[in-house]
Image 1 (cartoon, rainbow, N blue to C red):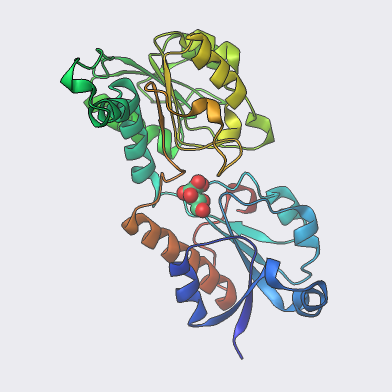
Image 2: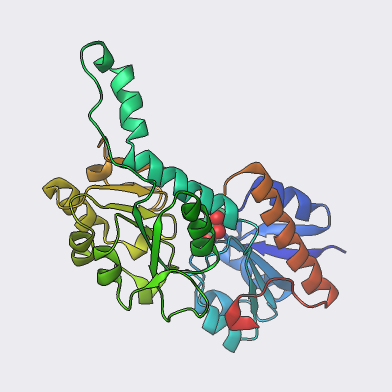
Length: 313
Ligand code: 8YV
């Protein structure tokens, strides 16, 4: 008989198709309470995604759960400490998506600074027939601040170096052997940046760390880029700063309340928006899928898990 897997949140069809060949998958929200109670002891593996919330109660309700396999590198919605206490391992999909997310960060930075979507709208509205598009801001040689110098932060720095950018960062601690300028606070980093890119993970500890003060420090010519989690940026403060003209622009792939995007961010030539698609290329989504499958297979076979989150190592 096939092993059973509980699908706690939306994951790509590609992943479900692969797992379905060997396992029986049950969607959490399609089970009645009676069905769930009857099946709960049979689930040793659950699936989720980077955007999901997975609570202590969820882990508690599954007495034989040994693995929560997350499709995504971020797992800020997962109560990983509760999982560890209850003997459940959590895995995620690091590394394979780093390049794509860094590529999008660079694309967003250039799009916002050169106002590429705004310029396209200008052409589409017929504006070029009467006017030239207003001059924009330079990327090459500018100052890039990286908030959160992890895998993705480093990959962005590598790309920014090819644009001759001056690179500075802040993180929980200074990193040895890193050639970039270190700042011991986010506000100081913002004050030393033309572009501030948020790479720090989400979660309660980082909520709204990019606040009005940080935006004011970045300044009327500064541009904020977020490819991490919407919760790290105070979205209402961002809208106020854009309205007041105290922040130069923003480029966002993530939002506080996805898929809802605050109206105040829309239709501004100095704001570029993408729908949380940092890792959404075919090759990376295939690699993420394979990593989830590898973790699930390893769990059922009793082999070491390829990519446990740090709390579960
Ligand atoms: C995914 C992400 O969109 O990896 C992450 O943390 O935010 C994204 O790559 C998401 O996890 C898939 O649903």
